[in-house]
Image (cartoon, rainbow over all chains, first blue to last red; front, side, top):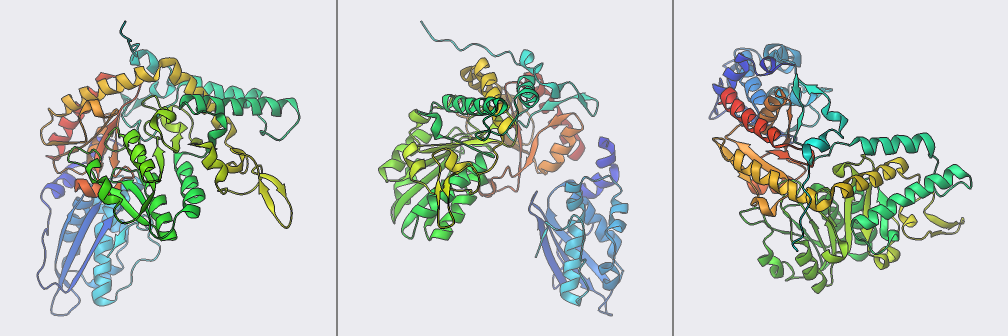
Length: 143
Length: 413
């Protein structure tokens, strides 16, 4: 893997200028999680539209490596305007394709942290199902 | 006449290590992660291969020639390990899988039977999890109190707080690493041992990071147990050693149970073999022990004093060069009080990103909590970068590290 593949322009752009960065006051759904291996942390808050189902706004806060923060930033762009049930069923590859870089098993957990946290938030607010067997997510602490 | 330490020629020693005969991402390998495990010289690899090819059999079992030969090599390694740390007797050396198992052995076989409510187990904020978690666990299981010696701002043990620690109970165990794997701090274990004995406690030393770095003398340290691993000192993974005072080892219950560690097995009762065999159930890491012996020969051939002096030189050079990098935070004591280990953070960049970008340059450093989460909490960071050096490290590799960090600044900044 070359250097440029991993830290390609779009990753660095999302890392340096994260989209949807912040906290939604009076959020309808909220969760936080961390990767104990490296200390990546992400907190996500969600506001639903009038139908109580569409993700009208979503924001994240966190600290950690460029991959975890950039992937979560990309996720914010991807899920806005979509339905909670659709995101609960969203396969991890949809995000990984967007991230678009080869990831070692260790870095895979970094890239998937935000998606895991978002699914927990939706599960908590809407009772949407959580992924069962999700390779690479087993060591994350999702609160 | 002044005693001079023979200089160590790292450039020449490097040729003993086959691992350096390759390129990583098209660049020469700069292995700056020796604190997690050291690379292996051909002398050690050859000794193990020759042993497998000419002398391998199980030990202490057969009456045939090959078994005697294997036993002699295995016990010879025990003698070398004893001499390496100036143990009074080879019988006081127990082979284990690594330092972690050696420390667990003491925690279980001594701790479980000698600790109870009102007793205090003392560790330090600088411990590797291997010398922290077993004591925390055993304290909890026995109802003893678990306490921690805190660090000063420079990453050294705050010994002024000792008497407060002993205030409300009987200190029974003091456990400390001789060299910190995370900050490189060389700890005043001899002073702690004196204090431990004043309290009627036993002193347990984790020497996993010290054994590769400096001459160890268990009698001068005044400790009661000391653990080390072969893999950090140019030997193979899979073997380590516990040294303990004979009278303590003899009074202790066994740890692992099974073959070889028994004297007599009857349905009603089993009695234990002599020390050290009482603690070596099952087939030992035989060739690995032979490899440990070869590693000791290799290090002694260079001279532990020369290795220590060279590591201090490298640490001083690294601290000086790294201080030039904008946005760097360096952790730990001054060079003269640390082994060849430097932990740092670069601006707000996560160590995993720093290490990943350096890897593209063929530079291997560790990024993470180094099995020292209590220490990371104290430093207020989730992780650090750690560069660590050994007898085969050359200054050019530290220069490449510094250049690499400038590149990280450019990419992520």
